Image 1 (tube, rainbow, N blue to C red):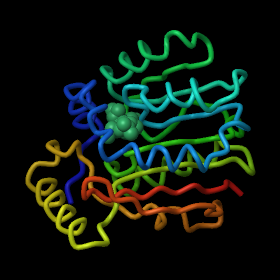
Image 2 (cartoon, rainbow, N blue to C red):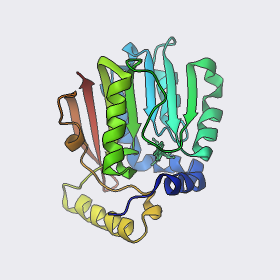
Image 3 (tube, rainbow, N blue to C red):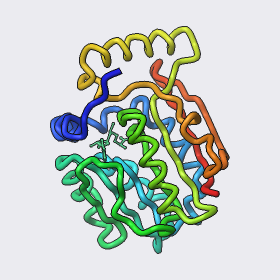
Image 4 (cartoon, rainbow, N blue to C red):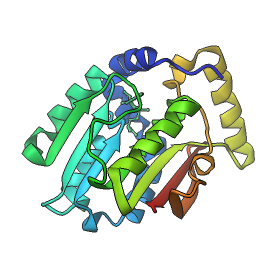
Length: 218
Ligand SMILES: C[S@@+](CC[C@H](N)C(=O)[O-])C[C@H]1O[C@@H](n2cnc3c(N)ncnc32)[C@H](O)[C@@H]1O
């Protein structure tokens, strides 16, 4: 399957911008599951990779995190970074947004976060980039900290398998039409000795399958 380059992904999301929030019709159930599993009331430092418009960050900071917690969002799209900065501006120094060139490296210190979150981003990265960003998550999280990820995954019912088939067909012909995203299996990337899987759920919303995984960094 042809994956978008970092430059192509940036161009797609620069164009897509605020329309990303319209994906809530299939993302929100996975968001709710993730938020319920991350013990966010105990978190003090959250990193989100591929923060998009800052929609999840705003919910986290307004409703789930202690007032003392800080948030760092990372994204490669200039448009997304501008939207997230605007949305999170009222939170002042509690929230910081960093733009990258798309390389799966984080200019953040080791052992400095207790939550790492990424929703609907790993599914647009190459295999090598998924492994690299999970290695970065492992590096910046302290032992005992939690990783929370959600992505498109494979269907497991008649309807969701059909939707997956159509999605993959579109991706094969023109990956930009589906934001470069394709169904993946998150568990396959988190089976190594660095992670202890605490929670895994398969969710189908509007026929689209998502996988939510929460893992403890050992
Ligand atoms: C499908 S959107 C998901 C946005 C948000 N996390 C959500 O769930 O609504 C993918 C996001 O990842 C960002 N992105 C794509 N490739 C990236 C990369 N290599 N590094 C950092 N961000 C990336 C895009 O700019 C976009 O904001």
